[in-house]
Image 1 (cartoon, rainbow, N blue to C red):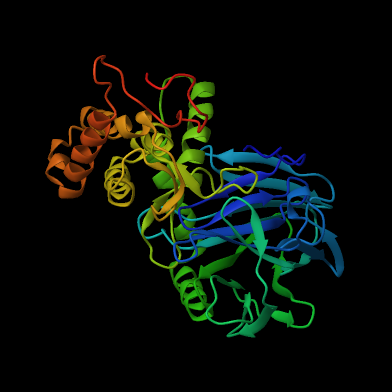
Image 2: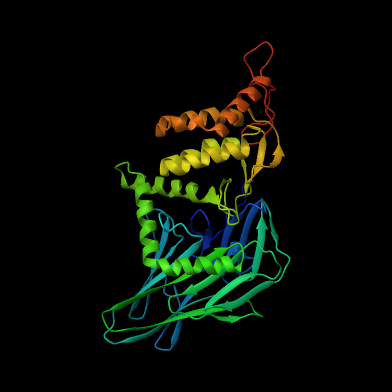
Length: 423
């Protein structure tokens, strides 16, 4: 079920609300933005083009810079990338005497956990004269899709409008699944409704040997009013505060082994699981676990109990014990009615039935590992967890062989049919 990954080495980032799996390494353009929607039991994704995975077509959002009246694409002279704390992609580029540094961050942490993205840019003037700079973010809404395992285009027309200085992107039909509000510091949106394109521009006057910095915001909501409200929250808190809180939160979660190269590898893998297998649905704000929010994983927005408890939960425990507790109880709430019962949609309903012995056993194993690592033995007092453990025990016992200490299973942890009826 693993789809061949695209040839482009996309930069990937996101938070528990938003996934940005397609940031182009050549020009830092954003080609896809996705969220989870519990009502749809799916990911809802906006893109600039249906051919987003290969980098074809227009971008959903792309930076350009105009210097003394001459427009340049960011990255025309090449981009140098680095990943702050293993998760926040940052780039640098040069346009004449100007050095451009940018960061694309989905905020996370205390007072920063919002359904949005910050695109911050700093421009350094290394020349001997003053530069008139216009920093612009523009893009196209060319494709909207719903994805469980395979993607299906949403049938209504794209809609774009300028509202209170922001560009608002959504679908024509109501109610919708997702709306985006895009704004910038001191920028007024220019919108072409018929072409579904937008542009926001920030003007800067930068003296020699000085710099200027500003930011654009992309906010998401289940409908346009909510997206605009989230945009207002992001503007009020300010991009410096959002970036600072995110860096502080990631730094606190960052693993420390004493070996820098190992720390970078572990951090990137841990944050990928932390943000791409766990998310909060835009329509109810509850936490959900899925196989992967990345569109080229063929298992998509479905999950087995074994994967949720043995793969995802340990990574979350490593990063954030508080979220691990919430996630463990949430898995028990959504999946514990039939431990090991098969593949689930994100809301716990059955996607594909088939009892897995390992899936049922994962519940007591995960609870034991959680208590050992966090010393939170009070969690056993939670009724939903106790019900799940009793259910797992009963389901396992009903599968026991009448004569031998062996147990039956319908499928292996990977979904294949076992060679022998008992194991």
